[in-house]
Length: 321
Image (cartoon, rainbow, N blue to C red):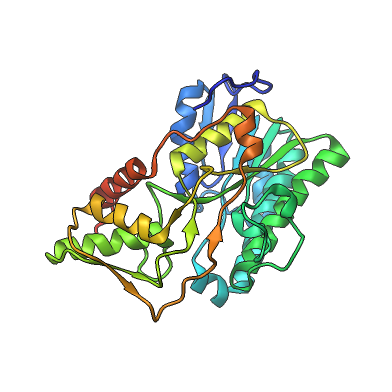
């Protein structure tokens, strides 16, 4: 949603639009959001239909389907354990996805492309809140540097094709996302799905307390995935530039505050317990979304409301708790 939004420079109405990675959390939200844009067709392809790591297949598919606009949220994703255990897979597959789709989109005459990065592209010790200018100013977080390097390469590819060919390819960097189609794996999930899973298990066991790691004092920023999709459509329609754009809520909460909201969401009335033997992680991770906010876009889903939506979807959809 927007207020005082700028004029539309690229209309999606009547266009053939491809969402690469439509089964993922961001991709599925984009498909939902694009229903309101009156596109001529929203194109999708499953992994069995199109392997994005195969250059020739991607080029053939794009030349045959001829999308006019491309959203590229597709990626191999996972938590700290997965990134640290399978560095070659995370670097290679994400490099291939970015390189193949961006190059083939140029070769097939795509009018506009939006590449989705990740906040992990920023240096481990970047000043808070993290602005776009912080890119490549310091060392990356070692546990996810392989994924981050591939995402940085995607940003630079978009900039290179814009510089050399005049391609209207842009990039957006989202903050921590949550919502429908999130990953609820017991080992590889991020903090919100992990807490929602813990709360569900506690509720089903008749327990009322919830435990978190560390002190609960670290600050984190969260954005509901449908708000992210709205921001990406907004950028596709209103933005054309070399610089990538941060996409965030503009505010953060402590992990303890988040956990208490999760308890309310799941109906847990007991105590929030803190395991002080576990690490806190970085004291704060907040992105500066001033560029996007100054364009007139604002997130519309308060964290409390988003958690309820995410939890309801989880209860209805994910049977293996």
